Image (tube, rainbow, N blue to C red; front, side, top):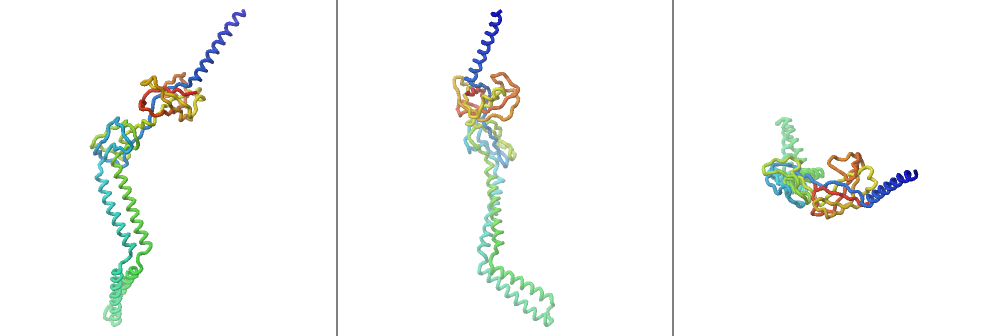
Length: 309
């Protein structure tokens, strides 16, 4: 009877020991999760759009920051820039005149005009009193004399602050619009904002590109990561900053260092295209493991991420 009781106890102890050893081994080895290598992608396009005149790269090409990808027809924008440059020069010339004020000969001319108008007014006033000319003719001469007098006063006073401010505002507005058009001109050459690989690109000379429409997708291979999914029951084993090592099928004998940089704050169902080595769980948390750049690693590669305990 005692032998029958002892045997189940021994089996239970062996099972418990095996389970404990498995848990200890799992803790020593860390979590092993699968995913695929991803890279930051950039949508490249133009604010102006237009007809493609030149294509400088092919799909799959490596580009550096500032390298032209596509050139759009610039003729219309070039014309607008030239017209606006002319308007800026005119506005600046007008401002210079306002700041300089009237020239001495202009003041002298205004004084002569006023004196002649006033002389004519006095002559007609005398004739009107004698009944030789009608009142209306005199009134017209008097109005003309007052107008010439105001012109003389303006010439002697020079430019008013309001006139200077208005001329300055006209110049500033013209310059702002010119700068805007020059930026539009720069948009006719679509350039790579950073070094990367041209992932998606299919344009030919003559194609039309809309404003704000992407013309190419660039991958930045120096910013790689693996997105893995941790079961809810294992989330306590993961922390931001945790070291990780990664392996890929193409280089099975090599490991690539990385670290956990992000843990999703919300649980989700395991994506259909993701399989974990642990038993699948209904609820998982996305974890982003950043990889140190290595020329052997390419976006899309399958990878195993081992999170160090």
